[in-house]
Image (cartoon, rainbow, N blue to C red; front, top):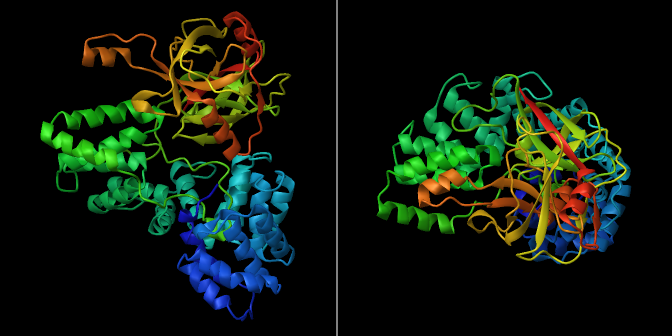
Length: 554
């Protein structure tokens, strides 16, 4: 759910959309309190106006109650009553808020058709939050057939109104040439407007443009570092890495290896899976040049560091729904501009069917930078797939396919796992060497947290190889308890410790995967753990919902 801190960009829009002639006692006081983010005071001013029938006050009071802004107690039932009344009175914020509720299933049954109706009414009046949300819905195919061209048109209309999230999206699409021709000069103009409004991905794109000169016409390394720092302070991993690289080498800024190591460490810690190894290597290269005292000082700072608030969320105050797909930052392994890659390369991985509509869940890094994707089910033919949702931070992606499965994977819904519980991994490891038949391996949950205590992951002993990524981790009754994600680099650890670790692998916990699916309005099924079977029994059952994934890169 969108949080209040990401709402600043919507404030000015509300006054512009206020019906002409509104001059009720308390309205100006309520708007002033809203503008200074004193939502308790704003609610006190809006409440009597709402009781008198003021639709604009109903919409704003509904927003405050819906999100629990400013410490005001959340009240979904009252919020929806107010938003419905405001929407029916043709208030665009009320229409948008009600559409958001139906889109996310918050306080009402999820209903995409009703969501699109109310969001469409607000969009017809030019309400930018609704235009942007409809852009996300159609561009990503969230509950509707995917239509990138239609999504881009909604983004464009909102961007023309100066709406920062849509400006940022247009900058990203134009920079990468996604769903439209590459136009980096216009991408930079869009990015600058969004960056100045505090949009994190836009700040990163602008930094890359100024670092390379692409789209900006000239290099300005000092300004590039400024924008990288702003994005890095909000936790953007590529921006943090680029800033760290510049500080470590003195590229455009005074050299400061300790400060460079700090930001390289931030970037490495938060890096998406495809960039993790390179970022850790760059961090360690700089760290090897620091003294023990310098290293201790930086590590103490890292322990207490947290990203600043703000960034690239949708503006909650204007009633925006959470984006059906979190915006993915442009690809950049270091200081290179977004994009790139080889020609004709193939990558493979594993996924599993979670939706009756053919939705497949896998790791984000399995489908990173794919020009085309195919999935092959058990005893079936390869069919095309497309990414409909992705989060690099949790390394998860959902794929849309035309599969109409008789069975789907079911997530375990009752008692939690414990260390020592037996599990089974199903996947397609080393597919270029081994057969295309799904491999079944067994092991146990060896720890309830992953690398460096990451509570999102299980540590497992079941053998995992390249190609297992994205496959299901099942309990001994055949319900899914996780998504296989990675293995420990044994040779690197051996080089550091002199000991060769065995069977230290990791899986994303099912609750993280379910949250990802919930956030993106993707339906899935759950089941309580049933009778315990053998690894062979579990494998036979789960193989039927496991798919082989091929990704053509460039």
